Image 1 (spheres, rainbow, N blue to C red):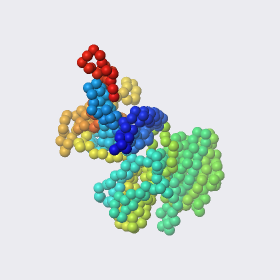
Image 2 (cartoon, rainbow, N blue to C red):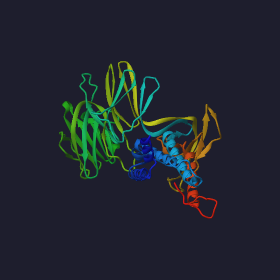
Image 3 (cartoon, helix red, strand yellow):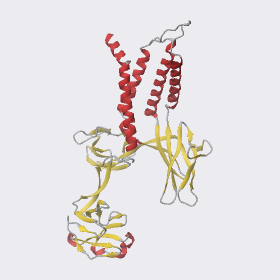
Image 4 (cartoon, helix red, strand yellow):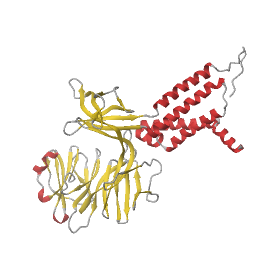
Length: 471
């Protein structure tokens, strides 16, 4: 019993409260700095949504509760003290409820379409075997990242093991040539090129005959890979005034021609690792590698966290069954399909998918332009709410400062995008805060407690004199 009393007194002590408040203030400073320098998402992952920050709030709640119980039974003049502590506990309970059950997501729709699926920016791993329901697993590694020595392993289905042995918080997607040795000739000739200069540095692969991957458009310049026998300057005139044509000759020999200021230069032999001038300012290019048979392979390289932009995480997986192993990379919002021993698996990595209990339908989207310009002055969505195919209410216009509130959710007009066919894609923010009323009530109780403490500092003993407050 004495030991329990010592622990209780420590949890109720002012010293612990001061230490917790100092750590809380430092954490908030760190979170605010990360949010201003990097992004809200980075601050949420590293601070506000982290387990250690939740533990800090829990310990603070225990300290406040123990401090209040330490003075029980309470006296009348301690009403302000009790109310203030009760208000703090209500605010902390509301914050926990928001962290655990709150929603901060988005939904995108075009005119005439509807949907009930919303996406929340919480990295999630998806696993599905054939047509079975998919399984989800939150995957975010802000501090301890998996590696080949310490992989992250789990078993989503019987006889199936998923191993994550690399994770990048922010990654750059690279398509490179992977050599193949096939007598059927399924591979493509591939060239690895580097373009360097004071204005830009580019590193990329080109694949002969691959639609869209046999050329690289670099603003006012373009680089193409063709067979020398098929080279025709007329077919390349739409690529712009500056063109670098890499020409593949029989037996793997290579040459190049450069177009500068609408004039084609002479054909020259191209050797590996030999820098060549382009004539475009100080730009030079180098053939780093040539593969006679290759296939495009997607890999990722780790990059520093971007400033004022969202990060793009990526992970390397290994899927193993008794029939064999398949490995590969998954970028954010990417998916992969693997067939092992007659079983088909789908793996994906991206935002967390949630389902609304009703369906939103975009009736009409309107963009108001500033007079005489193409700059948008305002934009709004006319949205209807449906449940089981029936409209629950009349359509409502969502615009700035005019959200839609329905079923505990709040929908704000966040942004819009213009699609290739000219149609508008309306983007709505979706929020649900189950702890909102607790935080409001706690704030009111806290203010009431402060009023009692400052306006009624001493107990009324029923006489002219009064005794100082204790406790």
